[in-house]
Figure 1 (cartoon, rainbow, N blue to C red):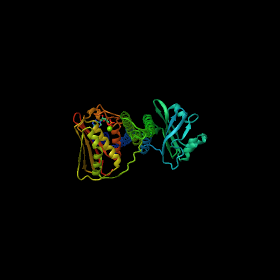
Figure 2 (figure 1 turned 90 degrees about the horizontal axis):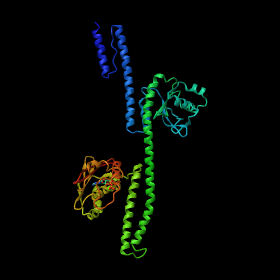
Figure 3 (figure 1 turned 180 degrees about the vertical axis):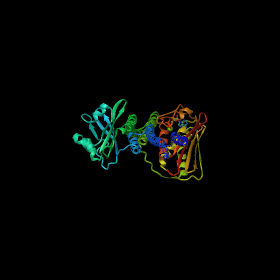
Figure 4 (figure 1 turned 180 degrees about the horizontal axis):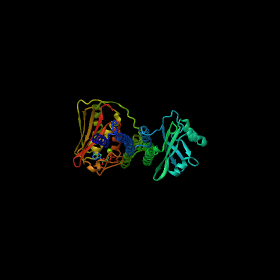
Length: 453
Ligand SMILES: Nc1ncnc2c1ncn2[C@@H]1O[C@H](COP(=O)(O)OP(=O)(O)O)[C@@H](O)[C@H]1O
Ligand SMILES: [Mg+2]
């Protein structure tokens, strides 16, 4: 008698088990079955809600692992949790231990005027936050107006009320078992927060606590990196002029303007001049690198006639190759389109690749520059018959200051900056660079540049 009804319920349960949480409530003759079905529907809706929350929480973790900053993560939380928990404003404040302050580091709000914004700070001592730090437990204020009446000195409550907020929930952020800050959820309605919200809020706070430390370190690293680039830039810049002056004096000597010089002196001066060039070259690379690193690589895009470009380059570089008895061959497709690039930068790229090819090759070999069109891109390759790069070292060649076990064959100098700069220039053009190398046979670098960057 009950079998068809049980079958119906079983099929609903099977659907739920396979992730279908929504179903139309069947009509049963027996009131017991009807109640059972209703409570299954209720349970299913609650499962779905929990499942969605869990998925959102997991997605925060995923976000965090992708190395984003606290600000990005807050954006994500603000946008994605609205559907399951109520708030019109989220703020995060961090404890600055030395100054015994809390300092707001990010805010997302629906309010038109934001009174408590990034950078706002307040002493912890004497504030109600001290109690939250002490207990480690969240606090709900269900009517901020009443709270202000009872705590007329609370500046932050007054300001948040001026933003239009009426109730709030404050969760402590814990990092390495120590209180590290707070996440504030606020709502424009009174009585928004119930104890039932606390679990999910606490879970968000827990997740944020974990990542918060990470993103603080990440931000610190970014700052340190910027500082390093600035230092590099200043140091290199201040070295450039005096070395330039020295070089000019050497040239005056060499040209006999300071007085007669003999052959021995000439040799010494020539060596000094060569070393000045080396220093200047290194300084240019360092300046380039620090500018590129700090995002100051401004491309001067223009139409480039590739045939002219390769022709000029070949005549410029022939003698460098000949000095090492290396043949420089060109294999340029006849009907190459013009490309939109910063031609000086692309010249710098090509020169780096060709200089490397010559530097790491033996005499009586060939270096070939080739270019062809492929789809909406132009591929430019520099192939040598040199030593090749061991497979396990390939991954590091584009990192700054990294060299491999492959050494220059003619006593040339090496700093390991060239390819790092090359890669950044190519990426700024939305292009790519690939390398194909076999030890004992040679290396081919191929850059792919979109015809329109
Ligand atoms: N064509 C090549 N053949 C073999 N090794 C190469 C070649 N180009 C680059 N390398 C390796 O990659 C390293 C990094 O190159 P790069 O950044 O241009 O620095 P540098 O030229 O100052 O050494 C080189 O030191 C060398 O070990
Ligand atoms: Mg190089």
